Length: 245
Length: 325
Image 1 (cartoon, rainbow over the protein chains, first blue to last red):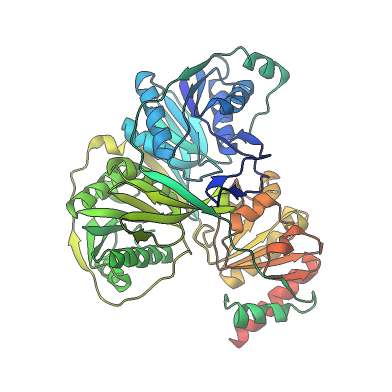
Image 2: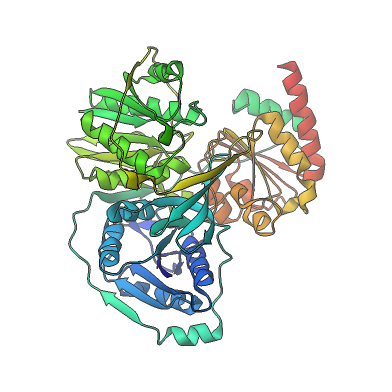
């Protein structure tokens, strides 16, 4: 089975988010970038599914040269090879379009993405890729079992789950539960340096959205403390002051 | 031109998040002085459909059929896109539910539309410029995004827009679309729904607990408090990582982002990743025995105390309040 895992390069989860240039640019000063945690889950599952010569795992990233450390990390975790489309990931549509062009020329049985990137949280690339390639897509899955001609996935729904069987090829966005993230070992780190990383130039495409600026959520006022033995006071405040119960 | 709202049903009924999305779409239609058309796919009664008029839909397109009883991402997207074209809709609104998140990107491609997922406010339309506020950095910030395409797809976060009743009944019309076989490749084998619990992503009140509870068997009081308040239960990442609670309850940067009216955090210290997932909660209550816990800095109300003493007292107080109300 040939699996493609789409990965993005995102600020570490502990990052305090700030902006510069009148709140129009994300302040990358001192920010550590990592492999998107949900993509790490996708990659880990892809490696499990192809263990023992049962296929290959290609990782693909749309990013400039600064994302190569993240791509190498994916190779160190165990991907077979990597592709970097040499462009700034303008938005989900741009990224999905570039990857779709690559996949049309290089078909895969299964395409995995993380459920969303932790920077823009769009969860759009999986669905857009599915539509561009005219194949099924499932946006957020918690479980993925592969058989020869199809896979069974668990999709999260409000207050439950849905179990689906989908024939290959299809696209799925993975969430927690699909796999435990794999940690690269020394051999993986050494071999990552020599694994193939192909750089592909992007194709021209019109874009449909622009980020104009950012806002930080408004700070809350001082916390109102209630004595530990007076829970009734809290209930009263929630009812009469906050009006939420 | 018109605005099209996809009214997703859950077992034949519309949830509050859908009424929010219809009210929101109504406001966008008003901005553009145009009509609001709703589309429903699946088995929904005529009365339930007509009731969407209460929130401002003038017309409801009803699409039903054996193959469409349950959600099929590809087929539903094809139907909604077709309806948008037939109704001359340049703006399509969805609720940012799990299914909505599957549909929005496919619709974006089909309609060559910019997609604003995770929208939290009405768009601003000035001199042909269409901008909208959406969540970014997993709740740590918002982005103001301009959609530059002629068509637009917007997915609204539950609990971010108020339900507005304008009165009125919608005209319900049957709408048929030729569907293609290749849109039905994904087959549903089973749907498991825990009907006795409030669903977390669209809950109005969430009771969440962390490592401060010490062991999974101590969750009884969390569940009792949640049930009394009609709330969903949630947890922090270390708790779901330890297997004390299911992953579907994990709230935070790499879990679910919630925006309830009331978020009660018990025994959670308030790591930056957890706070990201709950920052758009309207009111935050923190119960923690450590007065230095970072969670108190973002809380509206707090109790410094041992969860095992405070929560039972809180349960008793809520019972008393409910008995007197």
